[in-house]
Image 1: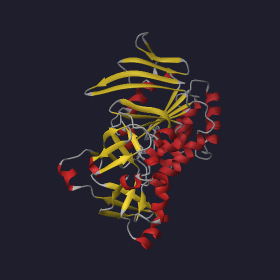
Image 2: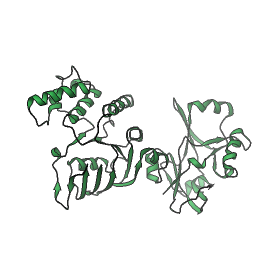
Image 3: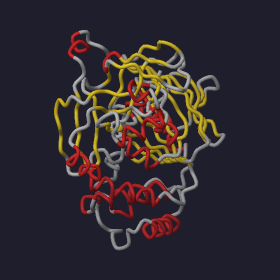
Image 4: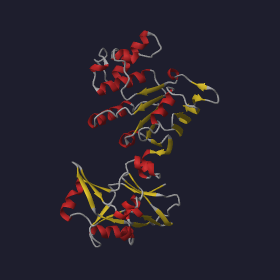
Length: 372
C-alpha cells in the first residue's frame, strides 16, 4: 500500500499530489513537466515536499506535522533512472555491491545471486560502457534488487531508446519484475508503456491528479478531457448539452442523439480515430447493420467525409477530415487538431479500394466518450 498526500512549490510550478493505492503495479501518465518525476523524487527522498505525508507499507517516510523525513538511503526504495546511473569506472559486480551494508563475504554472495538472476553471467568484471543498453538495464535493476527494496520507482527508463529496443527492454523488465513482491511505480508520457505495465493508473496534468483507477477502465472510459487526450484519443471537441439525450457539436456541425442520459457536467466528447464506422449510403449493408443498433440516430450521429489530407503508413491509412469553414472562422474549441482523424487498419484497405471513400462516418454511441 502506498499513500501520497503532498504539496510542493518550485518556482511557478505547484505540485498537489493525492494518491492512495493497494496495487503492486502503478503507472503515472502525464505530459512532460506535469510533476511525474517530482512525485517520484519526493517518494525517494531526493526532494522534500513543503507539506503532507508519504506512507509506504504502513511505514511513514515523510510527515511534516510529525517532523518525520526519513533519509533516502533508509527508505528501502530503489530508483531506476533514465540513464541507469551506473558508476562508469566500477565493474558490474562492484556496481551491484555498491550500497550494500553487510560483510564482504555476504556482498559477494548477493552479487553472485543477482548476476545469475539477471542473466549477467560472464559480465561481472566488465565496465558499464562495455555493455549493451539491455545489459546496463539489468545491472541497474540487479543493484536495486540486491538490497531488497519495498518499492521500485521507474523514471521514464525507456524514453531515450528507439522503438525496437524500447519494446525489447520493456518486455525484459516486465519479466524480471514478475516475482518481485513490492510496489513498482512507472512514470511515463507514453500511453503504450503505461497500458502494458500498470494495473492501476494515475493521470496527471499541471501538478494535479486528473483521475485514478484501474488502467483498462480509464482507457475505456476516461471521463475527463485530459485523460482522454493522454490515453490517445485524437478527436476531442467542445459540445453544448441541449437536454438529457442530445448534444450539439459545433465544430462538426452535428447534433448527437444518445439513448443514455447525459450528465450536466459533460463539456466535451471524444471518439478514437479507429472507432468510426464508414457508411457509403442510406441502404448500404453497413448502414442497415447500424440502423438496427441506432435507428433514427444514424442520420444524426455522423459526419460527412471531406478529406483534407491522407497519410499512408505501412499498417494503417490516416485520413484527416475538414471541419466547416464557419467553425474555423469562429474558432470553435477543439483539442489538438482542427481536423477529424479517421484511422483505417490494413485489413480494411481492400474494402476502401472496392467501394471508394464512404460518404459518412458514423459515431456508434458505445464508442462516444462523454468528457468533463
